[in-house]
Structures are given as C-alpha cells and as structure tokens.
Amino acid sequence: MTTSTTRDALIIRNIRVFDSRAGRLTKGPQVVVVRGTTIEAVQPLGAVAAETEAGAFVIDGGGRTLTPGLIDAHWHGFMATVPKQELATADLGYIHVLAGAAATQTLLQGFTTVRDMGGPVFGLKQAIDNGSISGPRIFPSGAMISQTSGHADYRPIGELPRGRTGGRSFAEVAGVGIVADGTTEVLRAAREQLMQGASQLKVMAGGGVASDHDPLDVTQYDEAELHAAVEAAENWGTYVAVHAYTPRSVQQAIRAGAKSIEHGQLLDEATVELMAAQGIWWSLQPFLDDADSPPMPPANRAKLLQMVRGTDNAYAMAIKYGMAVAWGTDILFSPDLAARHGHLLAKMTRWYTPAEILTMATATNADLLALSGPRNPYPGELGVIEPGALADLLLFDGNPLEDISLLERPAQTLTLIIKDGAVIKNTLNEPTTQGPSR
Image 1 (cartoon, rainbow, N blue to C red):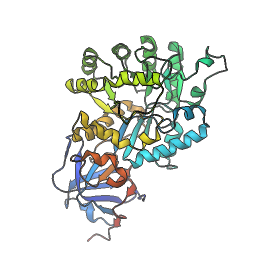
Image 2 (image 1 turned 180 degrees about the vertical axis):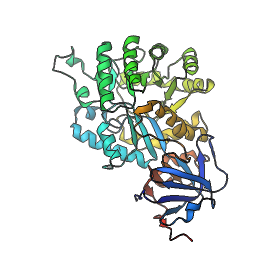
Image 3 (image 1 turned 45 degrees about the horizontal axis):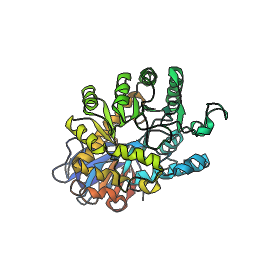
Image 4 (image 1 turned 135 degrees about the horizontal axis):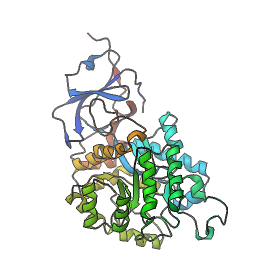
C-alpha cells in the first residue's frame, strides 16, 4: 500500500475507462491524468502530452478497467459492524474506534464515498478528512429524527414516560437518534443536526424492522411535523430523506416536501407513479430473505419477511416508471456483512445489468448526493471519470461489465484505489517517475 503526493501529475495509462453516464467502456486504451485532487485529462493512449511530463508518477494499467469510486447511498458507519446488544451497552469510545475500522474497511472495498443515514459520524468524518484515519468521504445526516414510539426511539419500555429516568436516553446522548414530538421539537432536532454539519436530514416517517416497538405498517409523524424538518433543511439549502415503507407514510412525506424515500418496499403503483411524476428519489436496498439477512428475534424477523416480500415488486415498479433509483446497503449490526460490501452491489443483477449497476453506484448516486447543494461537504463532481471531476478511481483486474463478481473480491481484484487524487492501494507497482521531458 502507498500514498501518492498530490503535487505532481499522476498518470494511469493503458486502461479501459468506464463511462458511468453512458454505461459502457471507452473504445481503445486510454490515459487518465490526475493533478492534485482532480482529473485533468482523459484521452486515448499517446494523445496526452503529460505522459512524458517531468516528475509525473506513471502507473501502467496493463489493459485493466478503470471505474469511478463506488458510492453507498445508505451507510451507517456507527452501527454497521457492532452487534445490536453490544451497541446498547458498550463504551462509546470503543464503538467509535470500531466505526473508524469500518470506515477503513469500506474504503478498501472500493467505496470512496458514502451517505451516512443516521448516527454520530461527525467526528469520524473530521478524522478522515484531515487524514488521521483512512476512510471514504462521508455525507453525514447526524442523529435520526424520530417521534416517540418511532423507528429511532430506542428506549426500553422501562424508561417511559419520558424523563422518568432523567434527561435524554443513551441513544440520544450518543447522537444515534433523537426523539422529537411536535413541530417545535422537530425544528430543534433538525437545527441541531445542521449546526453540527449534516449534509442532509434523516427523518423516520414509518415503522421499521430493526426497532422493537413500532409495527412496520405504522405511519409516523404528521404532515406538519415532517414539514417542519423539511423547512429547516430547505432554509439551509439541503433536503430531507425519510425512512418509510408504506403508501400512506410515503405520500404524507411527499406532501411535506421530502426529496428521498429510503426503502419503500411495500409501496403500491399509485404511490410510485406519484414519486416518478414529482421527481422523488427512491433509495432502495436489495433486501431478500437470504444469507445476507442477519439473525434477529422472532418479532423483528416477522417484519423482515413482510418487507422482503415487496422487494422484487418495488424494483419492478421502479424500472417501469423510470425512477431515479439510488443504491445503498443499510448494513446494521453485522461485521460479517460489512466485510461483503461489494457482494450487496453484485447481487443487484437480479434486476439490472452490470453496466446499470455500476452506473447506479457511481454517477446516479452522485446525483443524489448533489441534492445537498451548499451543504455538500465536498464541492466537485463525483461518480464520473471526466476532466474536472474529483479523482476517486478504481482499477479492476478484469472487466466488471463482463464479470460483476469482481466486486465481491476487492482484496484480489482491486489493484488500484485512488481517493481525492491520493493512491490508497496499489498492487501493480510503485509509481514510476518520469525523467526530464525531451
């Protein structure tokens, strides 16, 4: 493993480049020039003058495939790898250390950017951004905003009524979720996350699988409460994403002004048609009753089975109506699953072609991230290999458009990982330095 300087040009030559907008590889071998944190040029091999620039670092790709860095649009850095019971009882410092390790693991699997959809990752983001640890770019949501009895109300029954055992609950103090009822409390919760640096807000608008006290079919918050969060976000130039599964909860969230629906496996066709007509984003996850389903208590598993029965239908409707579909993992409480990040992307072949999958996890997800507007913590274009775009790049030993399973074996198949113009991993060779140009 190595880290490059960003002062001189970094040149990757003799490669096939994935055009993430068109969903295809470029014709013939290419050369990509990176200067600083951005891509300077993408040209046919032999056509770029910088190939012979003095001081340039040159990597020969040997005909391999270069793609943009992958993007996970529904990540939970604080909760991905820690078992649920341990998350509720362990020392917070210990959990934050595990979150740092999960971030590094995520980057080494080829995910150079993530949208964190709830949890205390502001410090993790800062540590990554200043180079203290290695990890992906993080678009943080901060604490998930929930009504009493909602999907992010993690209090046990013994802590009711509110205030009986003191002030805020453990999960609220930790910054995982915050319970807010009424427009005034919702506004305060929303503004607190924006104050800390949230790039978007996450609001719980319906029941969930992992929570213990809310059935999957319930609608959470009323329209005025949801609109209070939306208004706070829009005043800061950003948007609200809502956790919701059912038509009632999603339609209410749309009326309130939410821009992204997380999950939605139980939607009906009328609601999907409404989403498509209004340009609402659908952030779907490939939830199935398979080996990727973590063990859980019977009541939670019953909700899981109710939800996954709608997954195939949800993707079919999204395709039918040409929806703007984002891809994310929503990995929770499972170190084993977090180590198989790319597998959850590769399994999307159940509904999409490999080219469509790669486009979804690069250019399409980047378009969703751009909804953060001025709250975007990383100004610049992501998800594409174009001049002026941020230099997040992956070099695969093989062609993932022909063999999508390459995503499942990143330790073997990812020969080069570049984030922000810096070489994070290089198993080909140390970059060679050009001598004086002639």
